[in-house]
Length: 99
Image 1: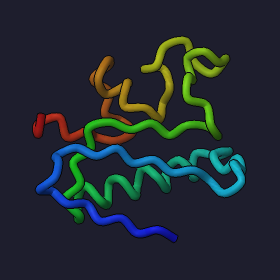
Image 2 (image 1 turned 60 degrees about the vertical axis):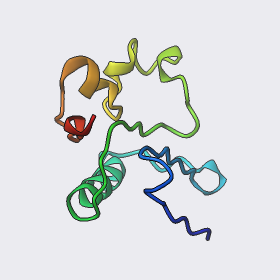
Image 3 (image 1 turned 135 degrees about the vertical axis):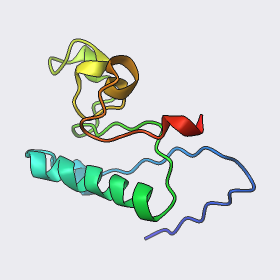
Image 4 (image 1 turned 90 degrees about the vertical axis):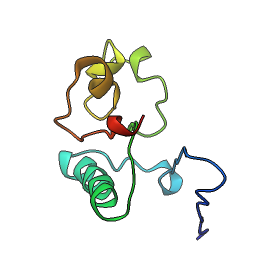
């Protein structure tokens, strides 16, 4: 497993992505999405993470809008598009005050 160290002197913003081993479909139930959301909340509250955006995607669907799942990006429950376009912070709160 690779370990990453973030140097705040180099830049202020980071993009992080990860994939599931062998692209197994793990997001079959709400509880699996909750694990990611709860982890992000923990890092916001205890590790100094500022969350400006996120998306939890089913397998490797990058353009969810072009599928039959949703019509608009903000319709996908696990995307910060809801926060930005609908001011809906019901899944997770973004740290918009740092912008």
